[in-house]
Image 1: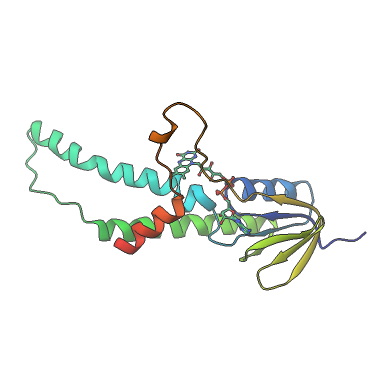
Image 2: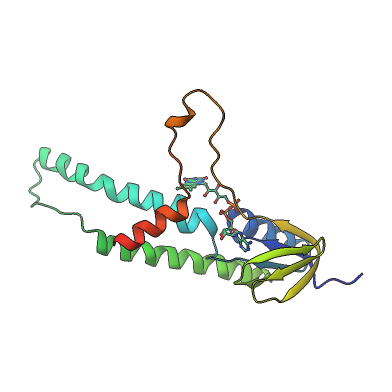
Length: 170
Ligand SMILES: Cc1cc2nc3c(=O)[nH]c(=O)nc-3n(C[C@H](O)[C@H](O)[C@H](O)COP(=O)(O)OP(=O)(O)OC[C@H]3O[C@@H](n4cnc5c(N)ncnc54)[C@H](O)[C@@H]3O)c2cc1C
């Protein structure tokens, strides 16, 4: 049976992008659908923005320490708006890197939500159907509160809702 692709990956996060690129290296024809932004949780909502925010938060302390070592530094003030602009510019840059890596590997990209219609068919949000010998679901995960003592102390919320609130407040 002839398929459109050897592999169709649903989800353009760390897992999906890596799997797609590795598969093309073996000569497989690969497509990938991402409903949001290429790079997924790590690049767009998780590891990268978290680290940049943590780095930004550390400078106040460094300035205080520098004063203790004789540096004359005026009153500094953190301004969320310029930081947010630079943060998003960096996320845009990284998303571009991911897109170029996929493109350079020959992965066909679809900016669309995908669902499995049958074991060899993926349906995109515009109704287009693509067939593949293999379908990889790399759609990430959600936090689960474990059944253990003091589990109620854990705080969990979907990161996308946190991110939406951050963006709407700025
Ligand atoms: C705040 C935070 C900080 C983190 N910090 C670190 C860190 O410092 N170091 C580290 O190693 N890990 C970190 N992680 C974990 C890391 O982000 C995840 O392990 C990693 O992103 C998982 O990759 P994934 O490809 O499985 O899923 P994801 O990156 O979540 O990718 C899944 C993708 O699938 C897409 N998708 C979902 N459903 C569909 C659909 N039906 N059709 C099309 N697309 C769909 C989503 O839009 C998403 O882009 C952090 C996570 C969070 C939340």
